[in-house]
Amino acid sequence: MNTILLFGYILLNTITSAEPKEVYLCNNKKTKKYHYSASCKGLSNCQFKIAKISLASAKNKGMTLCAWEAKKNKQQTK
Figure 1 (cartoon, rainbow, N blue to C red):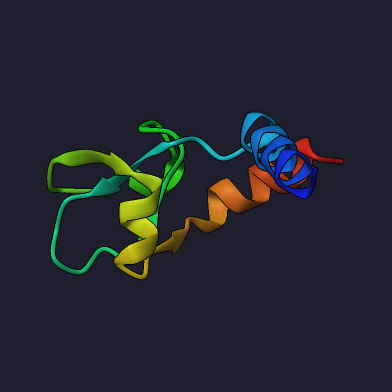
Figure 2 (figure 1 turned 180 degrees about the vertical axis):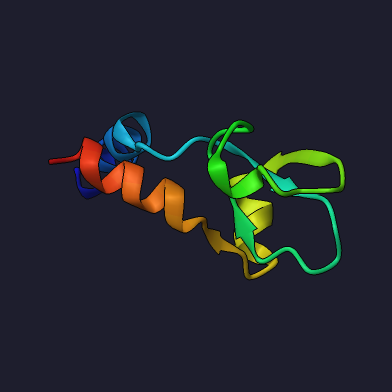
């Protein structure tokens, strides 16, 4: 019974998650931020190729969400 409840919780949490599975970043060696959208203001000064990677991969590299995206996300949840 507990296994079924746990599975249901994980499934529900996965479905309702607001985070995308893929994110964008400026593909240089100094990148520390990821973006939900390729057209984010935070990528406007990127002089390298904008790359698309998995959110999990970005987090594993120690990257954090761009401040513009975080602000936009916070406003949408209000």
